[in-house]
Length: 393
Ligand SMILES: [Zn+2]
Ligand SMILES: [Zn+2]
View 1: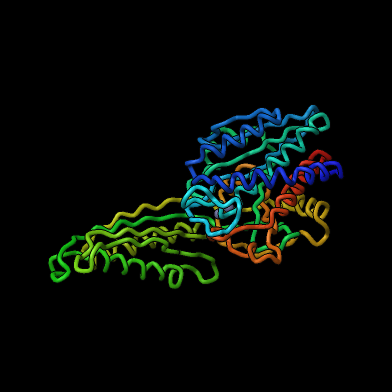
View 2: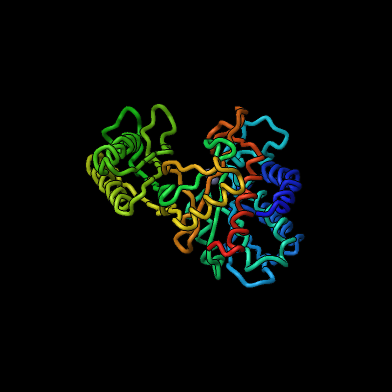
């Protein structure tokens, strides 16, 4: 990244903040994004880029074709929000009830728009092509990445990079860990069909609450008693709904949960264990269950060479102390799909400062981050482009 590029990006900081706050004010849920992709596409068209709308449904892809031949580099930002009621007391608080940008995707999009604004002026010097991937529906499997890939967003792409702000990494640092850094994310739904009736006559019913709670308890045994203790896995039940009145035996129960793993064999083992536990509970409680198991995102595995490029870029752009490595965690990210198709890396950029408002975890109703982290995302993206333009691949 040249000094001139850094300066241009810094000069755009107030725009980036304004775009981010606009998106924050009007968040949209995964697979329901309408205004957000329109906002992004309009900004990109104003810059004079070649823009494709509705890629894989709701994604936006823009192309900056340099005047000289060279590699094709894809940079990705996601733009969906979460079903959370915002509890922040800020001027740009969400105006869409029950929906909130509580993961920072508003910031990723604003930062990448900033990068596009800087690079568009470099067109004459650019070797190769930059593909800007603005992706819908990261938060909800099956996710937007797969749809966009199916629709050709990686055609001709040589390497792909993606960024995420992180409220658990101090400002000024960036995680540049190679190999598996995030888990596979699966989701399951179990419908328990019993037979409702009078609370005083349980013998004439099939109690869906008793059966459902038994299921929830037995699911805890999968990780505790079935999975190899040297392996890593999580089974979490996040939804349990049943019952309507104190003296009515519930007719049905609804359970939803998530499974996180790193190894394919563990992933398959857990799915099989869930089916086996359900069959057991059906036998012992006489209810009937249906299980819907969704294979969500694969584990996110950073490629070695592209991660080392990222590490060098981070040192150059943010200083010697900036790059850090840290253990993998069991969050998921559909950027994993891009990395199954092309070499590349995904990086978490520190956004936590001394300000306590930046200390809340992602997906918390008070989540927020230091917006200066968006400049770091921008600098890293610009550095990556510069690096490949120098023949760094
Ligand atoms: Zn998230
Ligand atoms: Zn996220």
